[in-house]
Image 1 (cartoon, one colour):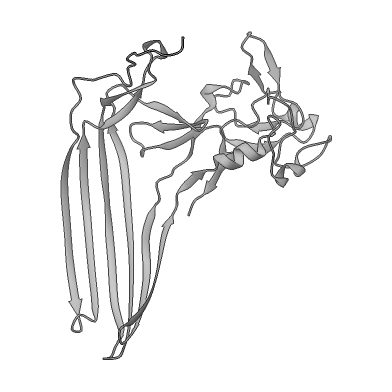
Image 2 (spheres, one colour; image 1 turned 120 degrees about the vertical axis):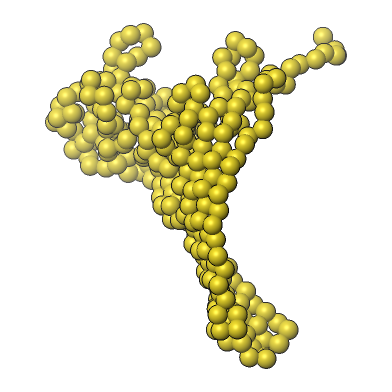
Length: 284
C-alpha cells in the first residue's frame, strides 16, 4: 500500500502510421526599381497534402481517448505580396517602410472516416470535407426570451432530459435557432458558427536610422478570423458559485426585461451557457 513498481501505458500505438506527403506548386517574382529604392515581391501557391496526421477519438473502453492516424487530404492555396520602399536614403538619415499582405484558403478534400468533431474547452471544432480546418461548431444564439409572449412566438421550444421527459424554455432563457425545425433544441441544431482561419494576414513596418542608431516599429495584423472566448464563458455563465464579471448585472430578472444575458439558474438545466455564438468574437 505504501510503494509499488508497475508499468502504465501512456499511449496506444498505430503500426500503420506514416508521414504526411505534400505536393507543392509555387510561382513568384521579385522586382527592384530606382536602384533598389523600391522593391516588390509576389508569390502564388497551391499545396496538396495527403495522409494527414490527425488525433482521432477513441472509445474510453480502450483506456485512451485519442490515437494518431493518417486520415484524408487537404489543400492550401493563396498568395503573398510584399513591398519595401526607401523613402529617404541620405548618408546620415534613412527612412524605410515595408508592408505585406497574404491570403490562404485551406480546404479539407477527403476524410477516410467522414466528418468528425473534436472537443476542446467545452467547445466543438468541426473537420469536414469541403470546408476549412477547425471550424467552430455549435448553436446560434438569438437573444433572450423577454416574456411569455415571445416564448409562445417561438412555439415553445424544449430540450430533452436524460430520463426522456422534456423541459420547456421560459422567459429569461436563451433563444437558440431550431435549425432542424422539430421544436427541440438538440445536437441536430448545431451548425458552423465561426472560423478561426483569417481571410488576410500581414505586417507593416517602418525603420528610421540616423548614423548608427535605428528605431524600428512593426505591426502585424489579421482580418476575418473568429475567436472563442472561453474565459468570458466561465465568468459570465452564472452556473455555479464562481466569481462573475459585472456583465451579469444585466441578466434577465423580470417579465419584459429586454437583455442579451440570460437569467441566473444554478446548474444551468436549460443549457443557456452552452457553446454558441454568444461566446464567439471577431478576432481581427
